[in-house]
Length: 190
Image (cartoon, rainbow, N blue to C red; front, top):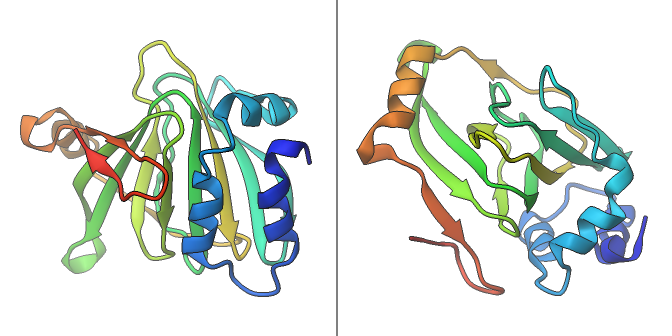
């Protein structure tokens, strides 16, 4: 793997158990690693698909998977969890919308919040968090770098009421906010 990923590659290669999520987030957040260099070094993995977002595997072992995910405008993941795996991802280019969900009685999920992450932002989540990732831009592609630990082999997908989800995303009270992070600081919203 190229130079801008040396620290991440080294950490992942040494794993003999699930990655420490805080450490993984810190490595991905490292301000010394510029997004344009990551994109250059990962260019061969930046493959898009017109029908759905593309998951391009960079490397994997029992204890991790590293993907470059490429999203055309309007593409989104299913509503899912990471069942047994932690996930940390960095936005390499574009704006990424994460919609978070909570379980209700009878196994139904409902959207409870949404956040828009700008280029350079890192998000880290535990295995039982339920979310959806989307590129809500009308014209710009989105590229994200995702690391799962241990390797993501199973997950749950959830049904949602598309009309309710659309309504949620349009309401003023639940409008996405822009999340930004400076090195060593907690995310802030504006």
